[in-house]
Every structure is written in C-alpha cells, then in structure tokens.
Image (cartoon, rainbow, N blue to C red; front, side):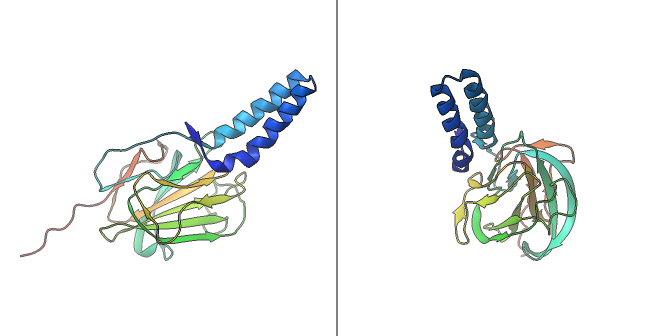
Amino acid sequence: MTFAKEAWPFVLPFLLLALALGLLGRRGPAIAVAAVGLLVLLFFRDPRRSFSGGESMVVAPADGKVTAVEDVEDARIGPGRYRRIVTFLSVLDVHVQRAPVAGEVVLSELVRGKKLAAFRDDIADKNERHTTVILRPSGDRIGVRQLAGLLARRVVSYLDTGDRVRRGDLLGVIKFGSRVDLYVPASYRVLVRVGERVRNGETPMAEAPPPRMPIL
C-alpha cells in the first residue's frame, strides 16, 4: 500500500516528537505519539484498485457511503441535466480520489469557501470545493466535485485543464473527512443506491447508454 504525499507534513511532526521522547527515555509517551502519527498516516492510504469492465462504465471517484442520487443542473459541469451521486467520506475512509472515466480534463477549478459539515444538504455551493470535468471520447462530460467539510481543511487536485487521464488515475485528495459528488449525464443508468458503500477506482457507479445506430 502507498500513501498520498500530502500525509507527510501531518505525520512527520508526530514521528519526530516520538523519536525525541524515546531518546529522553519516555517510552510510554513516545509509543502513544507514534500511534497517533500512524493513525493520521492511515487517513492518506492509497490502496491499489482496478476495474476491468467496459468503457461505458463510470467508476467511483471516492470511497464512502452513497447518501443521495438526484437530478440537477450545473453550468460548471456542462449544459443539460445531470445525475448527481453524493458520496460521504468518514474519517475512516480512504481520502484519495481517482478519475471515474478516461478522457481530457476540460475544467479544473478551485473555489474557496466555508467548512460546514459535509453531511448537510446545502454545502454544494457554500463549502470550499474543487470541480474537475472530464470530456469523454463520446463527447459526454463527467464531473467530480471534491468538497471540504467540518474536519477537511483543504481539497487538493492533481489534474489541470488539458491533462489526459485514464479511468482509475489519481485525481486528488481531501485532507480528512468530507464529501465527493459525481455528475453523469441524465441519460446514464445509475448503478448504486443510497446507503451503499463504494470504493474508488473499483465500484461501478453509472453506465452510459449504448451508442445510437445511424439511420440509413
């Protein structure tokens, strides 16, 4: 298992303090501090994931629990209606996000905002958030919005406009618990239900409709 590089500014102070306490002969406190550092490191774990399904499938960008599936319109994602699939991340979930589809990044936008609790319904346009839109070869636009929460102090994206990504590539990380919204066109079939737990890069979330046959 690997870990997101953003972990080390949080973890190293614990390890250095544990080392100093150990050198001073304070074994008990050193072990306790090292254990806390290890728990913080686990927030940033990046387990290997894979999905071998067809290209029509959209996989989960984040680990967590599906808390809502709803129809929305969002000009930042694109024209028309979309299905928004909301995934809530607890502090125990993997906090690295992955690209749900292959394609070209046509939007990578950070908006500063509040740090309200991620389980609230009204944070989509209030909290700090980063929106990534990937244009598929079919012309469909798929959006991923990383939202900061009460404990999440920063949202990080690894992708810039113009980047080309494969399904399952690293997309970013949220520092501690929060929420990730996946946007797919309204024509897509959603494959998950509210209450279901999903895993980034592995759980199929939605499926594109079959391509239309040309009229002869």
